[in-house]
Amino acid sequence: MIAATLETIFWLALGLLAIQRLGFWARSPAAPRSPKSKFSNPGNRPSFTPVR
Image (cartoon, rainbow, N blue to C red; front, side, top):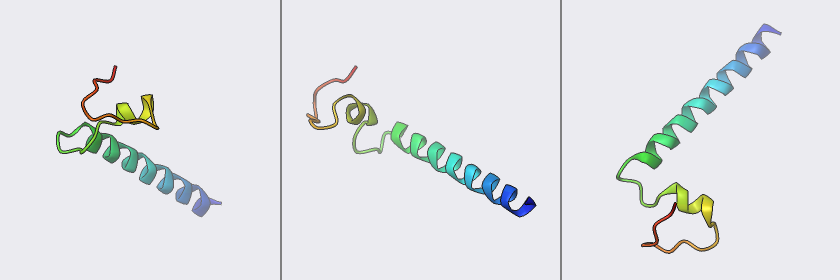
């Protein structure tokens, strides 16, 4: 029971770290493309169109 709880907490913490790391990578200037365009129009991503 305790082991299962600890394992769940471990995986949740790992997932949060991964999400934070991905968010940081997406905000960094070295990212190849902005994640906003991916969410607003997933099928069509023109490179120079500004995305609201």
